[in-house]
Amino acid sequence: MNTDEKMTGDLFEVDKRLSLKPVVDFNSYLRSAFGDGPCTCMRCTASKGDETDYAFQHTFTFDGRPTHRRFATTAGSDVLQVLKKAWLSYTKVELPLSGVLTLDTVKDFVDPQLHKRLAPLFLASGLVKDVEGELQVQPQAA
Image (tube, rainbow, N blue to C red; front, side):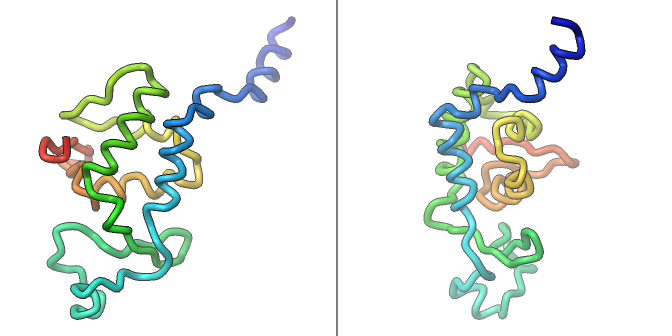
């Protein structure tokens, strides 16, 4: 097989790790972590959607449409649980529970159309904190 054939073959090969159950489950979780429309919790309703004083964001815009975080299933511990399983399954090493979360590694096993949901979910759940542009895993979430 010549070099051109090897390169062409690589384009069509799918990483089998992407079909592992924990990875598929994480992608499904990420799809369902947000609901349609702006947040309608009592706090958002009372403030008419002004989230200025909120520690964590409730309403997000993806693809030009407002969405809200589903609080019942997206606490930091919930996000960490599914992320740890997918990370271990994909990378074969444990997710570091402190320090910088390598978002590029997470993106490797997340459907490209869901990439824009990662940082907002991680930040809004309290799993990570943005420290000088880096996502730092928070010890209380671990």
